[in-house]
Structure formats: structure tokens, C-alpha cells
Image (cartoon, rainbow, N blue to C red):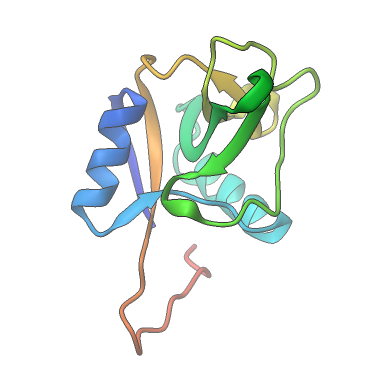
Length: 130
């Protein structure tokens, strides 16, 4: 993981992560969500909003579909009540004011972000950072 408090729009955040061989974070389950929220709240308590790698696309019949950057499978979501809430907001943030639940925002907003890196073959990834 790389955590950046630099304020970038969604596209620039995604480009930053790709430059370091990763994507904006894709969250696979409740355990990873809880761990990430704990890390962010403990080490970055003054940062309110974090881009993650989920975004929406509009398909046939104007149906909205959410997907992770890089095609990672969407098996878990953690949207706040009444979220996603605006058809003009296509990018997703984790938000401290709502308990690190997710909300949709305009992609032009400049926010902090979290990258998830690809482990090299044979590399052990440790999520127990404290």
C-alpha cells in the first residue's frame, strides 16, 4: 500500500498509483476495509476523504455499474446510507466523517488517496503494519 495525502483529482491519483506498479486501492472484504480504516484513522486523522479505485460507468438503458480500476472483481461494497447518491458523481471516496464508509463524488475533486501495489511473485505481503 501507498498512502498519499497529496490532493489530486481521481485521474491523477490513479496515474500516480500506476506509476508505482499498482492501482487505487481495491477493497476485497470487510476485514481489509476495517484494517484500512484503522490505518487511516490512526496515522492520518486530519485527512477526511480518500479516493479508492471504485468508479461507476453507465451501460445500456442508463444502468449504472460499479467496477474497480484494473478489472478487480467487485465482491464487497461499503456505501454509506443514501449513497451512491448522485448520477453526476462517478468516483468513490472513503470518508472519515461517515465512519470510512463510501460515497460517490465528482472525479474532479482533489482528495488524498490510497494505492494498492502488486506483489512480485514470491513476495510476501504483510497487512499487519502498525
